Structures are given as C-alpha cells and as structure tokens.
Image 1 (cartoon, rainbow, N blue to C red):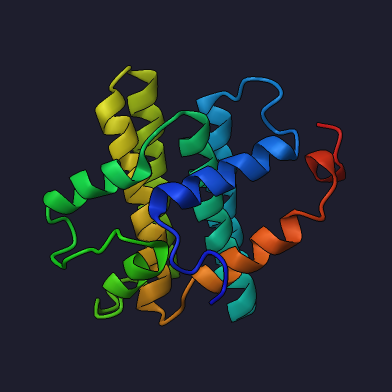
Image 2 (image 1 turned 135 degrees about the vertical axis):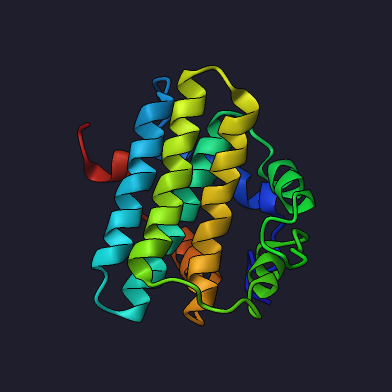
Length: 185
C-alpha cells in the first residue's frame, strides 16, 4: 500500500503543516490574508495548466495550502467538512474517512461547469473566508475554507481526475527540498 492513501483528513492536514514547519515556513507568524492569497495563486495556476499531470499537481497544491492553513490555525478540517456535509450542500453522501474516500464520494457527480466557473467557485469560497475572517466571523471563515477544499476535489472529480497521486508525489519530493525551498523571502 502506498503511504498516505488511506490517510484521514486531519492526518493529511497535520502532514501538510508539519512539512511546512520543517521547511521553515512557520518561524514567523503567518497572516491569514497571505495564506489565502497563496491558495488563490494555486487556483490561477490550475487554470494555466497545459497537461493533466500539471493540472492535478496544481489542484494538489490548493489542497496542500489549505492543509497548511488549517494546521497552522489549529482548524479541524474534518470537523468543518462534516458540518458542511450535514448541510447537504452537494446532494450526495460525502465520506470523510480518508482523503481517498472523499475523492470517491465525488465520482458520480456530473460536470456542471467549465474550468473557469470551477475556479470561480474556489476563488469565491476563499474570498468569503477572508472577508469573514476580517469581520471576526470564525464559523463562516472556517466553513468557507472547507468549501474551497471540497470545491477543489469536486473540480478534479468532474473532470475524471484524482488529486491523491499528486499529493503523494509532492510529499515525497518535498522532503528533499531545502529550507524555505531555497528562497530568501
């Protein structure tokens, strides 16, 4: 079995955050607006992807950055997602027992939008999250972070793609990257 395939959502969040800490990205406090802007940039990169592999890598980067944000702010993404699922937002039963199970949940959903509209759904959730954070509305903030995560996985699913293989690959390659990924920031 490939490491990480049956990883629970909060284990996934913890892994993303711990790698970020090990690489030196949390030596100084991180501002919420900056973290959300980094996620926005990955959404835009997904739109610019020219191959399926690159597209899946960019969607994986969105999920990784959401995991880092949740880990750094001690947000239980699994709990947030279960709250969203109880709202029956997608009209399907979502399985949060693992990242793999969550991806499988979206396999039967029909494509509704093109890439630009899918990107707008993720961007929109992130923008609402930032606005809610700035207004001190924590519950709406974390709900929209969860929606951005689910919309990213749904985006891949409606195109018939899986993000998990790209996540596993990125986890393996990240361990060999230098501190701050060789940048000075």
